[in-house]
Image 1 (cartoon, rainbow, N blue to C red):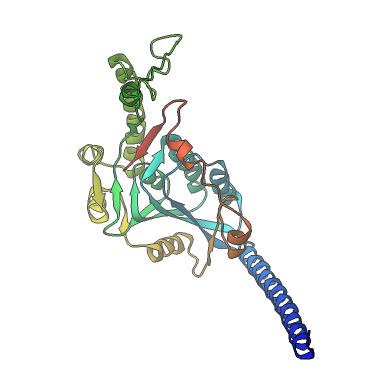
Image 2: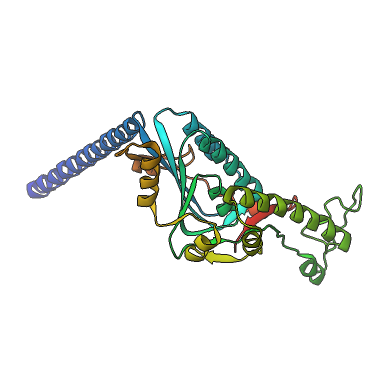
Length: 302
């Protein structure tokens, strides 16, 4: 190897070492910045503030999220709560769990629901747990009702020559499943479950929104309403957004200038640090909506 080539090779090695050291330094600085940012965010939670949480997408029964709401209710630094809802609904049990947790918090602190593009079915049920419901004029809300949905592969299996044989302890055991056409008796039995749950949903709306009998019947047919129409029917209190929610809370508490602080459950990512070092798990989402072990009860707008 010539002297020039050797000098050039050594220069390349030095450049690679410098590049590697620079990359390490950059990663270190980013980590320090993220940790510092995270510390500042945590400091905000240690002084009086308005907590803000978000409910996005289909609702499932989430223990961590429910625990977060209970913790906010017990936290002395949380003076009020704003709940942003953008959801078509979901599992009835999931919606009920959040409703119960929010109802308990609302007995102790002011709370406001701010409805986004969609807050229907279970999403609207949750909103009724707060003191005030605020929506945009073109928010879609309502869809008060309950459904049971399940796929049925019996025709497909027949076409490909597969028989599924079932032995059961009684006629109604697993009478709605993926592989058999339900009998009239099974349909009637499950319709009773739907009717019972619907009456429960309807009674909550009637109690929380103090609707007249006429308006209660209007909103309980499964229909969807814009924010404007929903306000006329008594489903929402005000047309607006977060600014109006903060104003309501400030008037309620007679305090001005409380900061808004975002809270998330342990499975949610709240900072860039979390996004880099935590991996969200959505693999179970489908399992919550389609299960070969049975059906689930939903209050959802598709």
